[in-house]
Length: 339
View 1 (spheres, rainbow, N blue to C red):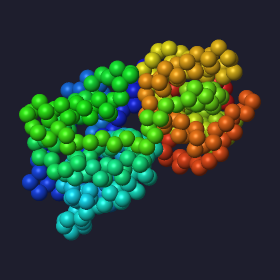
View 2: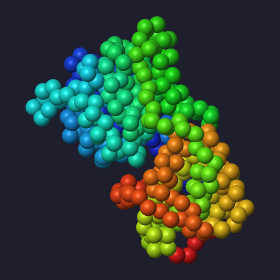
View 3: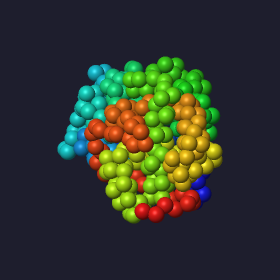
């Protein structure tokens, strides 16, 4: 970890609908308890919204920008989730409506857990845009749903080897939690992954990635008003914005490896030094080989942005991102760059 800088927390947004006999209070309590005792508990932040209406979900996700969205409540056989309207009456949201909602938030939502009966159809629809979506393929008992949630968040809080997928691991932990309670519903939870999320990245993708990041690192590692202004002027606003999106995805993994931090700092000091660039390329190769979902996300950004190396410069085109989607990274104790 970079000195003086904490690993970015993972925000969990819990959305609880009309109880109607469900022990949603117990499920929420179990989730919070799992996170409190987790090995990596400092990585998680929990926000809870109850008695939600469709507009409440839309606003909560937009305001909180969570990495994990957890829905607990009722589901119908057609995959719709049961919420309530302004008058407190039942209001149903279809799988297609949910998919459209999460399409708007695919830049930061990484996992959606629909802990509700018959929610697999909604999970399937949402998985077109979100990396990991978990739903239930039939009716699930209250006790089983709670056990699954408990196991899932236990697993999410464990220290996981780099070669294991954290959400797949947590999903399996949830299923085991059901089995250990001698409940016969462990086959009900299903996990859906975004199309092509496991598509292997190519070596050339890493070369392009490093070529793109190298001139941006002096600014990314010294963020401040002057740095942002200087980056926009020197690199171009579009390149700076894209670089910020990519860096926010890579930063937690880089922070976790001392060699990766050193390589990034060396490139920031001298963005044209071939030895430093080669070292960073090797570190990013290791990181992406151990995280296929992250590799797919980065590859998608590069592909959509039409990033292509041209000599010492990068030519970029494609859609722009709203400034509100960017998070600033902390200042690294490295050689400062004059802007």
